[in-house]
Figure 1 (cartoon, rainbow, N blue to C red):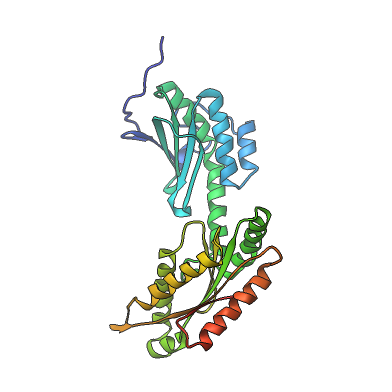
Figure 2 (tube, rainbow, N blue to C red):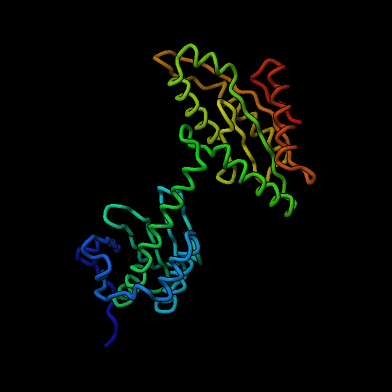
Length: 309
């Protein structure tokens, strides 16, 4: 008998057009959506539990699926983690699986290939994805914890701990590949007056809004860190000093041209920025000190200025 092409399925695990794999308490360790009992101690499960890296888990599950259901690509998306991982080359036909345990979403896996998926193949994929559920939950929880540890809770920017761990690596990578990277040190002008006049809650609101303005002029590959108080550090990948000055001036002008509402009053604020390109003999400390000196020169020039060094 020839396998039947997949139809719109109606059962507790599916909604229109895609599979919704939900694991409830009365199912844990007993059954899976396809009706097959997964081997809890299989080699795949063992390998999945060995790592907390989501990228590795998706690669492992893709390889396992490939043995039974040939496909061109697998895509894992988790909006809460701001993660969109694609392995392989996208093709015309897709089958999507929304993964969750109880009411905890774990993300979406989409598998693509050049021809239609059959029911038997979807059931095989479900059986394999069932083994991913707990390892993936552990990895998602770990990634959340990592992001919390490296994220500034107020602004959503990376924090100083993240800066000290990420930037040295980014600098070395740039130096190894001989690609430019530049550093901006940004400070809000007269921010203490804002706190004194409107209170710290209003100051916190202003810091969040200023951070949103920074992001407006940055790419996804750029890194922004809250260094402390009202001071930020921005790393611009693949950007020389001339390009960094253009970005810095856009940020400076964007802040200066914005109006902020604090306690029903319109407030204007400015930023001062020091910047430098990071060179082959630099490390984080030497580059930061140079950009920081540029910041202080901008302050001495009357603030609301950009000084490259």
